[in-house]
Every structure is written in C-alpha cells, then in structure tokens.
Length: 158
Image (cartoon, rainbow, N blue to C red):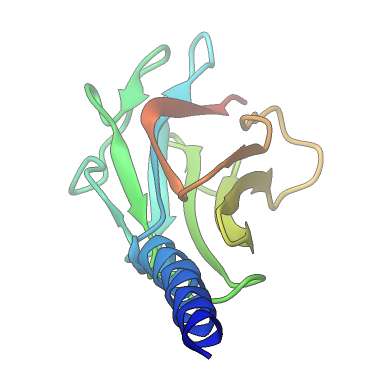
C-alpha cells in the first residue's frame, strides 16, 4: 500500500509540473521586434495607421526618405497578450503609403503570433493589399513566442 501511495503521489507531482510548465509558457507576452524599410529608390513613405500594441515607432509619423527605416535606429515592438490556449493568436498591423500622396502605394503590414502547442509559437506576416511591391519575412516558429532576438524587416516600395 505504501508503494501505491508513493506512486500516486509521484504521478501527481509529475502532472502538476507539466501543468505548471504549460502555464509558465502561456504567461509570457508574445512579441516581435521589427522595422520598416523604405526600399524605394526615390519616393518617401509615411506611416498612416498602426494598432495600439505597437511601440517604438516614429511618433508623430514623419516622412521616411528613400533607403531609410522606421524607426531610424533600433526596432519597433509588437507586444501581444499572453496566449493561454493552443490555437490562441494575437495580431497587429501598421500601414505605410507614399508621403507625397497617401492614397498611393499603400501597404498594410500584418503580424500575427499563434500558439501552436505547449511550447510552439508561430509568427506569420502578410500584406493586405494585393499586387504591391512590399515585402514581409517568411513565417517563423519558436518555443516561447518571443521573436525579439532578431529585428525582422518589412519592406515598403512604390
């Protein structure tokens, strides 16, 4: 009987540890470090909108000359809320256009982090407008949802 009690107690500790590990990973706020590059050879770009979960970007929005970056140095940060369950996701978007006429060359850059498993997260990027010259990184995966070890570049171009 003592062995059975010990075995059950050990099993309970293992299960509790597994749940604690999953909860600890879910408690971290997923994030992406990024910048936006004006890859055009002559036109300036300007940010026309952004979601509130993005920080570190040029404020107030200003024209970014050809070849420049927003922010000019370092990176901007998309920070989401904790993803408690597998399948949960959080998104952000930032939009740029031609500084000379904000109706032209619009690119809405979208970023989404999804929890794929207990220790598996995916960063997915896409552009809302079809047929633009804008670019985004390939999808990425990691074990904790923290995509800040590298600055990922979004590219704007007319």
